[in-house]
Amino acid sequence: MPIRIGKAKWKGILIEGTGNVSTESNQLNSHYGFSSRFESGKGTNPEELLGAAHAACFSMALAHELASKGYVADEVETEDKVHIDKTPDGFRITKIEITTEANVARIDESLFNEIAEQVKNTCPVSRALSATPMTLTARLRKR
Image (tube, rainbow, N blue to C red; front, side, top):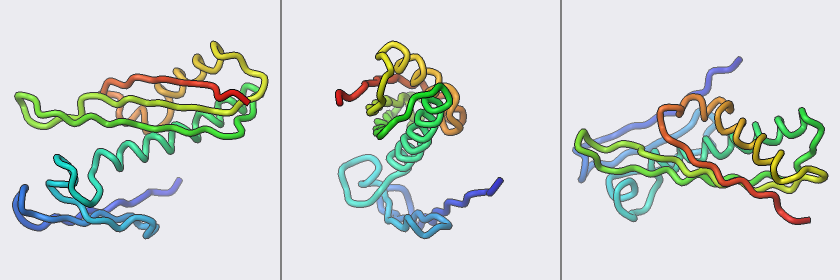
């Protein structure tokens, strides 16, 4: 299996410093800094990148799990809200809220939710983030 590479470079101290984050595929090359992480400044931040990575993994894993049970997802769309909070022992990612919606023929809401809950606990990125509490809202889109 391949090994994937992400890189980051940081210059300076926390508030005035600046950084750049990139991927080996060159699909991402972006600025980040204190204001883009803890305020509303321009640039990316580790939390939104983590959310995007998890949402991508979750969507793929859900489509796969549905297919393995005989259901075809025309589309799966997932959003992660990654919460970072200041705690007594420093900043921590305290919660991830997953919202996923899918177009799937011939499946009832209960089974869809059961499969989505299973994927929440088993997709590779979920497993890597298992120390962080996650909530899931799963919805079938009406066709």
